[in-house]
Amino acid sequence: MTDDFIVRWATYVRENPTKWKKQHTRFINAIFEKHYAWKERMLALPNGKEKLAKLYGIKNKEILDKM
View (cartoon, rainbow, N blue to C red):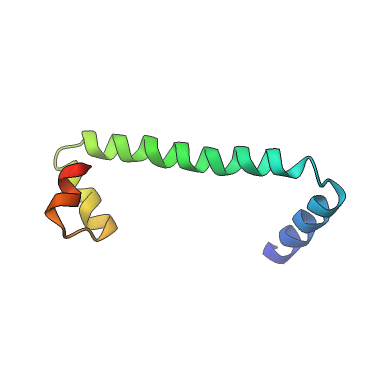
C-alpha cells in the first residue's frame, strides 16, 4: 500500500510540476499548525510543561522555562 502511494505521488509530481508544490506546502503547514495547537493544549494542562519536557526528553531547566 505504501509503495503504491509513493509511485502515485511521484507520478503526480512528474505530471504536474507546478500544482504539487502548493498542495504539498498546504499539507506541511497543516502539520505544523496541528502540532502548535496540540502543544498549546498540552501547556494549558496541569503540569503541562513537565509533560512536554518528558515527551521531548528535555532535561535543561532553561529550555523548559522558555516553553
